[in-house]
Amino acid sequence: MRKYLFVIAVLFFAGQTNAQSGYKIVNTFHIKSGGGWDYIAVHVERLYVSHGTQVNILDKKTGVSLGVIPGTTGIHGIAFDDALGRGYTSNGRLNNVFVFDLETNKILDSVKTGTNPDAIMFEPFSKMIITCNGRSNDLSLIDPQTNKLAATIAVGGKPETAVSDGNGKLFVNIEDKNEIALVDLKTMKMISTWPLDGGEEPTGLVYDATSKRLFAGCDKLLVILDATSGNVVSKIPIGEGCDGVAFDNASKTIFTANGQEGTITVIKEKSANDFSVVENVPTKKGARTITIDESTHTLYLPTAEFEANTPKGQWPKMIPGTFMVLVVSK
Image (cartoon, rainbow, N blue to C red; front, side):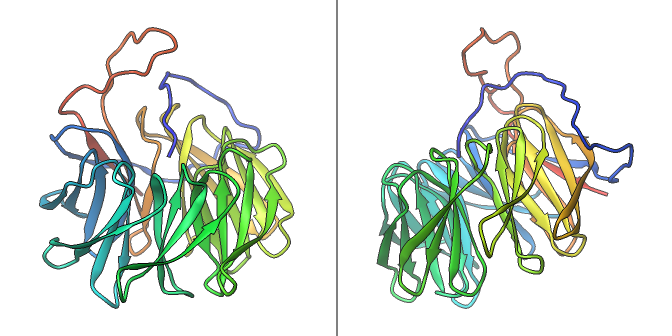
């Protein structure tokens, strides 16, 4: 996922109402180890946090440490195969995926991928582990039964995040082309690309299987597409620095993590063609990625404290020992 120059900003959004979502920061889990971060994932009662060269595993309710998966240099994301009881990490600087046991956290195997594997997912139709490889412009499909690379699919640009319709179609944000690639998992080929109509640098992507809508987090904009035609349905202004999007299927609510501004834009899906901003919930600067625990409707966002008075044009430096996970709920 891309990184940002974090600055304090205040934006007012068209379509925002005075309604309140009820979401707020209810807890903060502190992790003292060093390093950057990217994706965060919930699985059953555990929270998996990518952090530098390791994955920190926390109790999702208390934040108590339950273990560490070491050696995941350049870690981006974590995926899970419940049938096999295994987890998978995309290790961007190693150009591979680690396979680990979900009970013991022990690393069982490693699988070579394309260059700089970023987002990673378990895809239910093919039952493959899929990585989006940011430098080789392709997807790696790993067979979890054998821990072998089963296929490589070129997507014509930098793939950021992928989501599945569960029926053989995969949708992939192509960050440098400002489009979504449509991949047919039956033929293992990209079959189409859909422009985002003004949406730039798409990162987070989620899917509503009921309304068949795709929600692509772009620069200051959430672009909503019809997943059957690729047509843009709506474009909603959001906060600056979005790098992750979450979707609560029960409440039909979309959440964008706006790391540069330090907010979550909460958007209600009233129907397949009707959306409105409910609120921009304050979080913290740097909270750019997000995951949701749909069993509790709780959101988790990693961030840290940063040094003040950073010269213009430079990355703000993270203050050592300040890494944290924000817990956001009603």
